[in-house]
Each structure stands twice: as structure tokens, then as C-alpha cells.
Image (tube, rainbow, N blue to C red):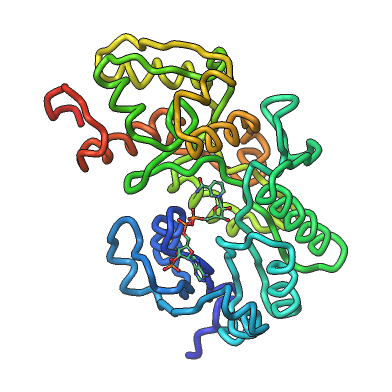
Length: 332
Ligand SMILES: NC(=O)c1ccc[n+]([C@@H]2O[C@H](COP(=O)([O-])OP(=O)(O)OC[C@H]3O[C@@H](n4cnc5c(N)ncnc54)[C@H](OP(=O)(O)O)[C@@H]3O)[C@@H](O)[C@H]2O)c1
């Protein structure tokens, strides 16, 4: 007896071996999708998983193909039912792909960022608040979101936008309690040494475990009638103040948090220019995003609080010797 082909079967992930793809591709395979992953082939997923044997990997350089005007056609030729675009950073890039896929693709999921809002205003930020992005990355991401949602609502192009916070997981450096990426801050807190924080440590960061980002992409696919034409935050249930974050990390190591607070102009002199710029980007946004809409419409239930996600990432950094602690090896 002939078996009818399910309507939504073939998924193309553009940029599927990074933080999110590491978790998303195995989830898609487990859910029965046929998965094609496009990357330049320069990196491997952060964790091995048997599901990758079922993932078709294709080497494509998006930047080069876009320059040649061929990227959209390349994706379209794969006849995807679903396209998950993890690495779109300009409006031109989004337009090029949408025009190639219009009328063919049934679901298009864009990975955005909570930096589309610019500085937080009323918190937790809900998806209906104004976008006031202030750096190129946030401005382009907000423009892409506006374009995709317009296309979904007025032309029927089936798009949704999912906006992660700071993505955390075992395998890479994460945003630390001083708002930059140097592991030394964790080492100092772990060893009871003083750490300087900018201002009074009340600015916020909003992390999310990479697997929870993967979860929301899956939930959007499942609840497509609610997801299409909408955007959703992919963050943990609650943001952290820098101070609260530092105190929690020190406590993991049985240390009091020895914190010193310096006004921004003084604090920035205590770190490299690069670290100061990264911290400024984080505290100028001070994200604090709501997950209420994703919970209500998509059934999103993050497995990790911010601190649980960070704990897993820091445990890995300790195992790698990148964060120093005087504690014996357990419980890490
Ligand atoms: N990281 C964060 O904290 C954060 C926070 C908010 C939002 N986001 C959003 O998350 C998305 C990135 O997701 P991610 O963090 O999972 O990605 P990621 O870890 O940066 O990985 C990027 C993926 O894209 C591939 N790639 C990079 N350049 C490519 C190119 N020119 N052509 C084809 N493939 C390419 C990489 O593989 P190859 O190197 O092998 O090509 C890899 O699979 C972005 O849209 C970003 O705005 C990230």
C-alpha cells in the first residue's frame, strides 16, 4: 500500500553545527524530520550525537553564494518544507532568501536576538514593546524581524522569529558576571578573590541554555498556527543582575563574593578595551525578556534557569582547566 509523504518532512538548517544546532539537529532527527545542514564545514557540533549520522551535511559558504547571487537558489533546490535560518545578519540577506523560497517553503524560522529592543524599558520586555536598537547587529536584526513579520502577515510568507538571549552551554566561553567573556572572572570568584563590577552591579544579563533555544524552535514547528507571523523570546525564565550573578557563582565555591563597585569610567580602565566594549554592549542593553508569550502560545518550558545553564557551562570550563578553583574535583 502506498505510504503518503508527510506534508512537513524536509528541514534545511542554515548554520546548524553551532551552539543551537548542536542541540537542534538531534531534536529534529528524533522527531522524524529529514535534516539537511548547510555550513562551510569548518566546525563540528559541540557534542557528538548518533543523530548526526542521519543528518545530511552540505558545504556551502553563504557569504560567497550571496555575493554570487546563488544562495537562495541553492537552498530552494533542496526542496525544503522547512528552513531554519540560524545565521542571517542583514536585511538584504533575508530578502534574498525569502524571494527564492516564496511559494515553496512551508515554514521559515529565523534566529534573531533580544538586542532588537536596544535598552530595556519596561521589564520584563514583552514582544509587543518598541524596537530601539542602537548597534548595527541589533538594527539589522530588528529590520529582518520587521520584514519577515510583514511578509508573513501581508503576503503569506510563512515566517516566525525566535530571539535568544546570551546562549550558554558546555563547550564555549560565556558572558560572565562582569559582562564580558574572560574566564578569569569566574576563577577569581571561585578562589574568593576580589572582582570589580561596573556601577552598582544592578545592570542585567539574560542567558539561555542552547538546548532551550533548540526547544523553542521545535515548539514553534509543532505549534505553527500560533507561531507564524509572530516573534518570541528564547531566554531563561529570569534575567540576572551582575551582582546577583557574581554572588551566586562565588557561593558555588563556598566563597563570599568580594565585590568592588566602580563607576563606569573608572571600571573600564580596569579591563582591556575589548572587554570594556563587550561589557558596555551588555549593560547598555541590560536585557530582561519575558517568556510569557512563548509559554502561552508555544508551550515553551525552559529546562534551565539562568544559573543552572551557567553552572553547566562553568563546570565544563573547569573540566577544561579554563576556570581555576581550589575546590577538590567534586561536584564539578
Ligand atoms: N551566541 C549568542 O549568545 C547569541 C545570542 C542571541 C542571538 N544569537 C543568534 O544566534 C544565531 C547564531 O546561532 P549559533 O550561536 O547557534 O551559531 P554559531 O555557534 O555562531 O554557529 C554558526 C553556524 O553557522 C555556520 N556558518 C558560519 N558562517 C557561515 C557561512 N558563511 N556559510 C555557511 N555556514 C556558516 C557555522 O559552521 P561553519 O563555521 O563550519 O561554517 C555554524 O554551523 C545568530 O543568528 C545570532 O544572531 C546568538
